[in-house]
Amino acid sequence: MHGRSWMRESRAAGAVEQARRDALVWIGPEGGDVDELHQKGILSLGVRELRRRLDEQVSGASASPPIDWKAWDPVRRRIVPGGIDEPTLTMLQGLAEKRYMPAGA
Image 1 (cartoon, rainbow, N blue to C red):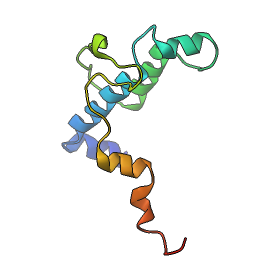
Image 2 (image 1 turned 45 degrees about the vertical axis):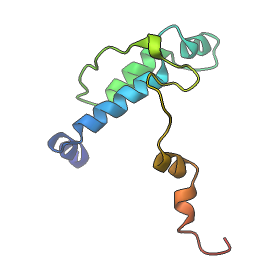
Image 3 (image 1 turned 90 degrees about the horizontal axis):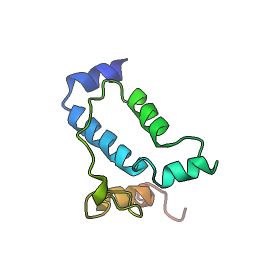
């Protein structure tokens, strides 16, 4: 409850909305590969259900502007050019945490 209150009061709302939009783009458009995998029984949820659950988790989420799915790249799962930023890539690869490991570990 404290965290939710802090998020509402802080200027983090824009970052939360951007993260929500990025998640929606990553899920992809209706009728795409996620829905195809859901129909085959490989995924338990389709696009609509994943979006609904995301909206439930991000309480108070406002309606995002429409997504231009023509620009969507299904391999990169993005609608904008470019790639992952260097600090995030380093974190995901675990390189950032290695600096805290004891020598010889």
